[in-house]
Image (tube, rainbow, N blue to C red; front, side):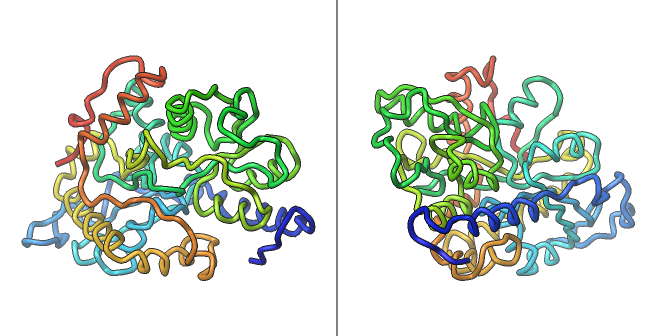
Amino acid sequence: MPTPRGRAGSTGSTGRLIAFATALVLAVAACGGSDGQDSDDDGGGGGRGGKGLERSSVTVAALPLTDSAALYLARDRGLFEKEGLDVRIQPVQQSIQALPALSKGQVDVIASANYVTFLQAHEKGTLDLRILAEGARVAPHMMDVLVPEDSDIRSVADLKGKKVAVNILNNIQSLTLNAVLGQQGAGRPEYRQIAFPQMGVALEKGQVDAVHAVEPFDSAIQKELNARVLVDGGSAPVEAIPISGYVTTGDYAAKNPRTAAAFRRAITEAAELATRDQDAVREELPKYTKVTADQAESIRLPDYPATSDVSQLRRLTALMKEQGLLKKDIDPGTLLVE
């Protein structure tokens, strides 16, 4: 992808961003899914230790974002196969799109599931949430607030009352940005819901004053529009806070404990690989996103925790409660699948 400097000649970038958006919009329903019966219902599936699996086929809905790297590493490095699993990945643009399919058993697991949405669904009773494994935690500059190069917005204080694009309203982006701004004594902006692939276009056309973009969109917008980083979305007080995970339902976890454990082992091994060898992640990204190999070299990656940390998850639920995104206390420890 060319990387022109400045705002001149940005029409081509707009077209590429729109093409990117189009490529991402894939509906789960059109892809079929599990109906709750597998060909290995007799427990014949393999897995470490010779324990039979309740089922070998697992359908996973996933976003084509850096958060999902461990899922694709596990697939392409044979880690699922080693566990006796046949994992089928169905791409979606927003994890919330797959929530009805998860509730109905049309998909078994959602990867890159943003915790805010799914914890809220659990609180409301629309989903009996279980967390199989953590997906990603905030790292420096894995998401940034970007403004046009010539914007009058020069400090976080200037964001008060300005229009800032987020992928989903009242979610992880506004939650973390509000915390960052609050620590610096700055007022809150007005959030506008704009899907990640359209953020560059909206910023370029002046429909918003700033965008809160995650990778790989963050780097793409900076390069194509020469956008300026105003706020590091991974800075204090939200550094290392969990943002997404691999989730399923209580019913699925109860009926398929060995399958769930096998899936978690594969993801854990892949997360350990992603942590010790970022080059493995950068090599993987072009396989499941529209990021080129050259772009993958400069993308800022999140942290990939190999184990779930209840204390870190409690940081998130406490922040949600503080900002009114949860009405009552939820102990994440009760949601983790062991």
